[in-house]
Length: 261
Image (cartoon, rainbow, N blue to C red):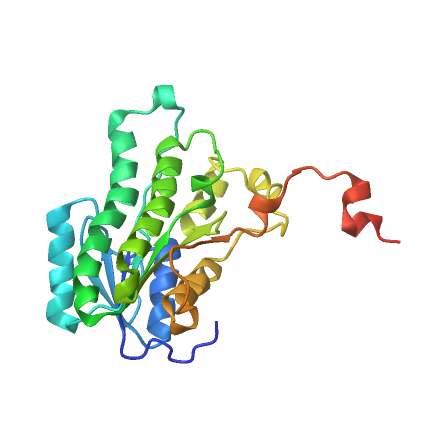
């Protein structure tokens, strides 16, 4: 998306913006003219100029309230919320600890609820606003070992619909983006240390590559912008074709690249 100042004068909060997809989203809003706040428990490895970093735990109501109060003091309004914060724990259900289960659900799903509630309280009086949450194809497809992550992402998709209905007449639009495999620093590290097999990922993606984080940020910007003014309650899948592929291993005679002649 070319920078055209679409968010000039707007205030955006992006949770989990210290790294990865969240960082790409925060930078994209900044480049479009927004005043951007990050809410994250950790410090960014490389702070981005023009982004205000607030310490906060999205799974804790008091911490969330304090972070949004800081936004009030410094900016005085809120136009966009992006719920991106999340963690991952991988294990089969019978081996998953209660702490890991609740940790993932509380960060993703409770975090979305707490931050969205704070945002809506501020957006309803001004009769405008946009909330975009980062879901995942894991909330739609089954992926072994990702029980709490998949459950939380499915919950985000469902809660997106509910919040959209509750706030439609206040001109607050609520949508979600469901990424597929995305090349973040965390994924890169997993590929290097062997905990993630890139070939397993690529064989499931028809475009045969992972997404760049900016390719997730751009759809978020679109859904938060006036160009999406009649879109609410929707989840946009951004996965390189993963979800629409019915056959992982296509025979040569069904492969367009191999059957041309």
